[in-house]
Amino acid sequence: MLVAPFRRISLAASCTALGLLLTACGGQGSEPAAEAKEAGAATLENCGRTVTVEQPPRRAVSLNQDSTEILLSLGLADRMAGTATWTDPVLPHLAKDNAKVKRLADNNPSFEKVLDEEPDFVTASFESTLGKGGVATREAFEDLGVGTYVSPADCAKTNSGDGDGARTDPLSLADIHGEVTDLAKVFGVEERGEKLVADLDRRARKATDGLSTRKASEDERPTLLYWFANAEAPYMGGCCGAPGIITEAVGGKNVFDDTKDEWPQINWETVADRDPDVLVIGDLTRKSQTAESAARKIAFLESHPATRTMTAVKRKRYVQVSGAALNPSIRTVDGIEEVAAKLREFGLAK
Image 1 (cartoon, rainbow, N blue to C red):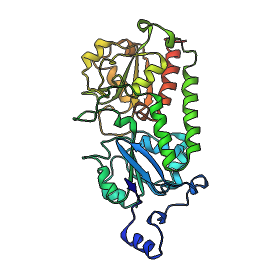
Image 2 (cartoon, rainbow, N blue to C red):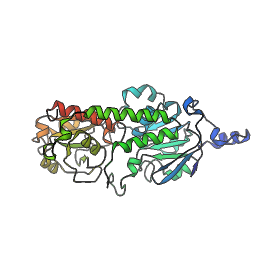
Image 3 (tube, one colour):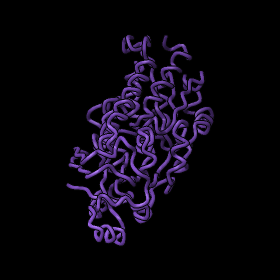
Image 4 (cartoon, one colour):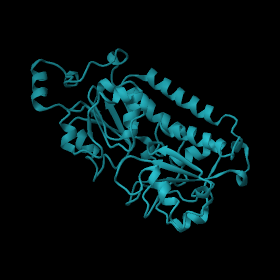
């Protein structure tokens, strides 16, 4: 599948009249960074598709925060035409660059709103974003010559049904590194990708270096529970997604590692029965579910009759992490750092 950038008919016609390739019509984005100016076509396998871009994108739209923060971390703000679907404030060190990029919507924008930005490439963290019921299908964009890319971490699970899918094989940090490497290749900034991957790896190793739990027997490992959102039917982290990466890195044990569902909805009586040592709580700023913020989650836990007597609640062993850290993303390393630090603070690890 050969991908050429989409442009409005008037722009494409003017380019043709000038005898230029369609892919050379840059629209209104700034000039690509010097590192990418000489880059040619890039081809990669993505979620069962062969994606080829003729030249590094100049007007990319990122439809999920996790993907957006990778692009910003690669120094590509000048080649981003828009972002969408945010659960958290942007990482502080990316705020200045993020402010230069138009936010199309806090949640999914319409297909038309994305096309208004004349994108030449669209990225997403979830298959559902570029599927039926999402912004638009990959085919809808590609029929217009707009390249698409979906996080391989999401494609590695079963995404059927109404839930968040299930995994046969646990994710690893290498899967997140692969997404960084892919996008760096597409944009012709491979060296930046290598540096970002090396930094993520260094941080994860530093956070867990010497952590006593990593050498403990299974019975001695601290038990963790991951709560993403919703108070009535809470979404808890299953064995094998981003919570699994964090748990493995810090030498813990997920109390719901017996389910391969990504985010199963589990009743509070079952949660209380598992009685975890530590609660890892998503601190979300969006407003699509109940109990989104960590403060609301903690208030709920300390007042609900089924949870207020749990060990972690009585001892206030809460680890507050961003929602993005609980999805496979560069922020999963933040989750490793935060959970490792709290295990030491709680006296559950040395």
